[in-house]
Image (cartoon, rainbow, N blue to C red; front, side):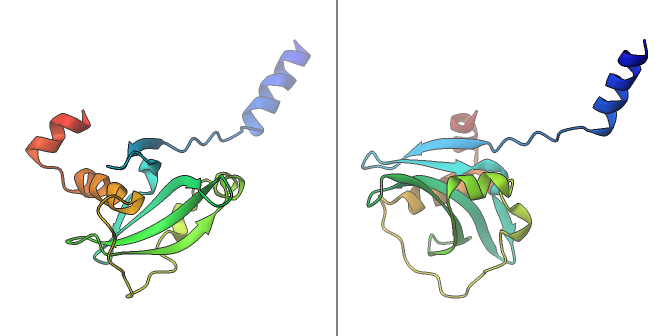
Length: 136
């Protein structure tokens, strides 16, 4: 009985917080895979902020980028980069997502990973009747 109580007390006072990042897989019109961290999607100071993950073609390794995009247009900026282990250890770093906010947004191409993620973010933050059916 004494061991049982010690075990219970140990478990109560040494709780491990489990954190899971919810990635949603998307595909660009030209077939490139990209993932959007659903928990990172934020609307702050008139901009969307969100984290995306894709394979860096030069190194063939995953890279995670914090993006800032306009709300009414897909002009965007890359404001932070992480490797997977750093991003996971920071639990997504959501508290600092707008830390490097910029006024210098650039146009994005239609078939890019950024444009694909921007459309998904816009659908999440401002759903319409037509895309509600698709998201569910």
